[in-house]
Amino acid sequence: MVFIPKLTRAKRFKRNGRTIFAGIAVNDRDDKQRKACESPDASGMECCIAGGSLMEGFPLFLNMSSYTESIIRIRFQFVFFADYNTVMKVGILHKWDVSPAEAVAIQKELVCKATEEKPAWRLPQTLAAADVSCERFSKHMCAAVVVVSYPEMEIIETATAALDTGFPYVPGLLSFREAPAALMAFEKLASKPDAVMIDGHGKAHPRGFGLACHIGLSLDLPTFGVAKSPLAGEYSNVGNERGDMSDIIYKGKPAGAALRTKRDVKPVFVSVGHRIDIETAIRITLECARGTRLPYPARLAHAAANDLRKETTAAIAKITTDGNTPS
Image (cartoon, rainbow, N blue to C red; front, top):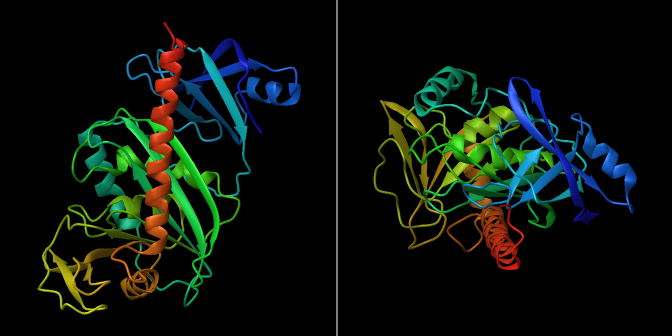
């Protein structure tokens, strides 16, 4: 149930060295949920502060179970809380509030932990696809995860999340902008997928540690990236038939594959993220691309993320029009 209560006060507390704000709401219809919101240990509770960021005027989502974001100087006007069942375990690899130089160092440190191996299964029974929608230089990240059955491609569930990021747009460091929102969406899933498809790169990355590696390592699930354009490495001409491919070579080593998923369209770029091999990643990508360039689950996630961005933008506009933004 989602409700819009009246905010009475805000609580600030420290968690793992980060400043966290928890809104405390009054709602006579659901006193139990109100009390849960009062606790800094409100595990599984999502808090959205509508218009909470004075600088951006954007709803700020806090995951009250992982505390991955550092929120400072926020004034509250309205909040709503939504319960969700958390079954996904997201590992905290590092803090997200870092500089670009620190982000590069983190990638170099973690790259050796992302493995390339054959999964225990030959083909997955369920597959999750994740995408993050935002304007190129915007701070507002809107993420969606869609889980489908495999190979039927029937939708099982969809989860979304949005938050503000303070990390700048830097090519090769998009993980530090997009991963927190994506991981927040994964935490809302009611089931654990067998494999994860990310809109982005894995090992085909300047430091061998793209978004698919970052999310795969955080989830500890077989994960691979499917990107629309290359980021690192070179590849030979790809044949024009569906299934034609060419290895992506970076620094003399295979880093992924340019894969033609449909005749007469540009290839996509597949690379390993974590706990999967490139052959399996290619096979799944090709199977999911049924008459289109992009795999069907990726298209679903892309549409859901875009819908969330549009809905959030409309909500902000309404709040502003109604005069309910914080002063």
